Length: 377
Ligand code: HEC
Ligand code: HEC
Image (cartoon, rainbow, N blue to C red):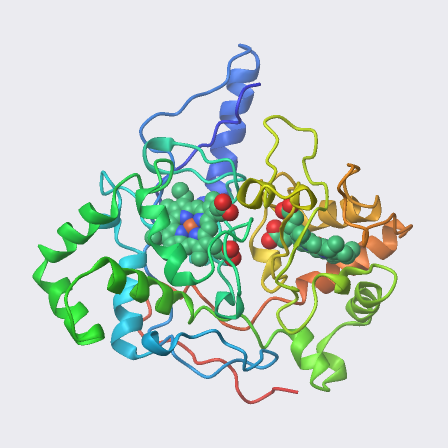
């Protein structure tokens, strides 16, 4: 099988997507006749999106989210720590050839995921899994699609040494940061100590704990503002909570039970990704993956652990068929018998889960309009 070619153009702003599509179309037409697949060298992922996050990240918890944030005692959120983690998240110094950073695969414009079905790392290396969105990870109790990391601190150093991600090593990253006086100063300010692997992990984890998605129209509706959802979205919510059965796993304020299930996505495709089973070796874990949050889900296509489902509608169609048949499929899944129209309504509801924070601010403006606090249900 030939992997799809990904054409990347390094140009700014919102033009990127349409130009990529446009150029891609021309190339596709040009090459189709020749029976060739265009290969564009030199400007492929990983791209590195610039930091255009809002200036202040440590705000109040938005409407709809709970108090159960998982913040370790020794890594409380302070402004210097968040500023340090933020700088590191966008800094290619952490990658072997200084070409990629965390943000390359966790792009703020896509709920901190990427449009690539499977992650592309340093040198164009392709992983087998989809970059998960990083929204509301402060509520997470396990990390990675197979839940193999228990905390964000534990997770944070792994991509640095991963050969198909940043392809460097933690020692190398720490050495480079120690050689940079501005980092030495920032680490001291943030943690009262030196540049160490431990403090590096803490800073990255702390920054990620500020990436909150809430105050969506669905939250305002739940808080009592009946007009926050359209009539169609309201029916979609009702389907989510009744015949759709979605709530059985996507539950609570963060729309996840924080557990692992076998939905059967890509079952039978080679090489088979056995998910949680690869971590535990337990029979019942075959094909189990972590239930992702559905907040900001409209921004993070494509979907599932391998990015194999392109659109939200296709995800709902997948569930309507009862998920993917396999011997280990979760007992909570069964065919739903939703009509095409009902599928559309459920999709409309999923789109209302987009939070109110604008993660990518216009590059030419220094000041950012604060979230509208005035019209919360
Ligand atoms: C080459 C792309 C790539 C880079 C670079 C990368 N990641 Fe990831 N990230 C992924 C993929 C793919 C996964 C899922 C892997 C898995 O589940 O096995 C992931 C998972 C995660 C998760 C788990 C989220 C969850 O909800 O389970 C966090 C947190 C995370 N990455 C943070 C980071 C940080 C911090 C960096 C920089 C130090 C980073 N990533 C660099 C691709 C990347
Ligand atoms: C049995 C538990 C369960 C039920 C029921 C369930 N889901 Fe999921 N959902 C999951 C798991 C687990 C994943 C990740 C599966 C994977 O990647 O292998 C997932 C993934 C998704 C994703 C992709 C999110 C992303 O970031 O990639 C969407 C969207 C989604 N579910 C929506 C729904 C909707 C809508 C319903 C109801 C029709 C539903 N789910 C029912 C457990 C469930």
